[in-house]
Image 1 (tube, protein in one colour):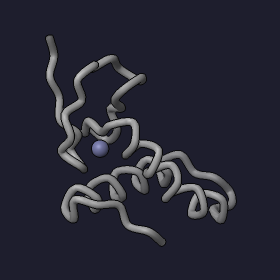
Image 2: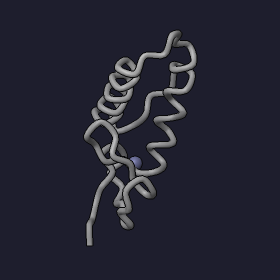
Image 3: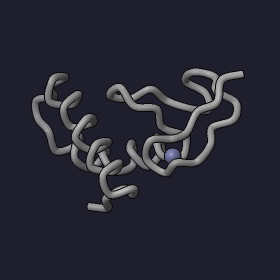
Image 4: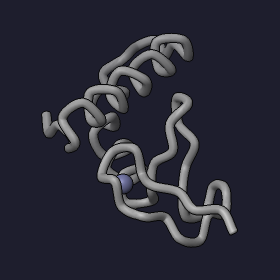
Length: 77
Ligand SMILES: [Zn+2]
């Protein structure tokens, strides 16, 4: 059985079913709670971006995840 740890909060992700209990984002594995937090953190930022740019969005996700990992927590804007 596959055992995973969330790269941000370091919690064990016991039932590792892709896109259900964990999310593979920007080459990192994050748990559902952290993915929710990521979406919550990015939503107000994404909303102000006009026109929407996918490359920018990818970079925003990567930066946000890396920042959260280095601080072991999510930044609230
Ligand atoms: Zn997590």
